[in-house]
Length: 231
Image 1 (cartoon, one colour):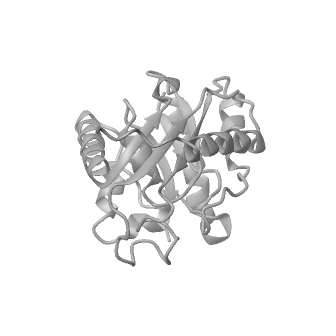
Image 2 (cartoon, rainbow, N blue to C red):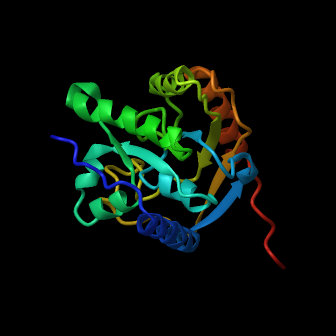
Image 3 (cartoon, one colour):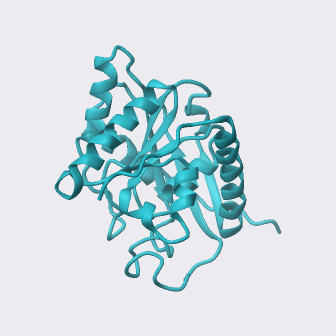
């Protein structure tokens, strides 16, 4: 499979991404009870690599919809071919990626696009596990994250790493909790979803160090007390 070129950014495209982010925020707020903490750690300007655990296919949209800026995010190239959704992913200017053994061209292009986005001062959301969890646990972080950071450092423009811990999306129709995502009926509505964003990590952070930081945030999210209901 050849990588289909993505359209370059434009003012109209940025407006579309902003509208999409606000629409996603509305839909997510109706479908879930979102509890997001730590937004102040995301830079208002300039590049940053946001790394999070991967619970479901909805993760990137849940994170992105609460940010104050339009981020790029990295996702499987196969999802761009999903009927009815490919146009949405292209509007969001996602960065498609594939395993090298499946499509080395797509993988190489993904790292080039990530670097280009960061060099252009954008936020990039990356899921270093490389796949959605099958059992809800946090897997190892692959070294691709370090490759991204080394490339920026070699260019003389290191970028901060912002860790994010997600809890509450495993079990949704977008997760593997009950089989393949989006193949079963929703079992929950208005489930509470916690997002914890931590302080910036060093541009020289290792994948394992980033995993530990994300793991701590996931635990904080998991232990978050439910808000008291009004009497």
